[in-house]
Amino acid sequence: MTPQLERDQDIGWTDLTAFEGNTLYAIARLQRDDETSYGLAIKRVLQDLYDQEINHGRLYPALDDLADHGLVEKSALDKRTNEYVLTDTGRKLLHDRADRLTAALAGGDGT
Image (cartoon, rainbow, N blue to C red; front, side, top):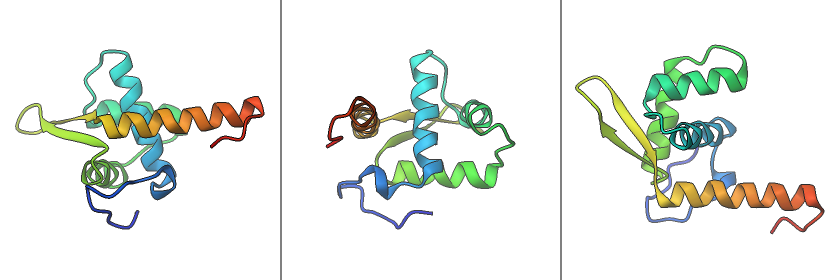
């Protein structure tokens, strides 16, 4: 679990666990496909990515941490289900990470 960061503090990719970063990816993928990004849908994407069962005790604390960091917005779909949507900050963090990876693979400096 990542150290608690204040919502107004800048958070970088390295402040996240790998699982939290992959959870952001899962939410972005669901949003791209116009699917509702609720817990079980996110879990399904992550299970495909990890090729193993993802338990609730791992997923929901990660989603709460991402919401606490201001990277996703959590809202109630119904009494039992929450939806998680990337914030502008979360989307920018993913774009910045993708740009750095692309630059590294293309031989750029990745900064």
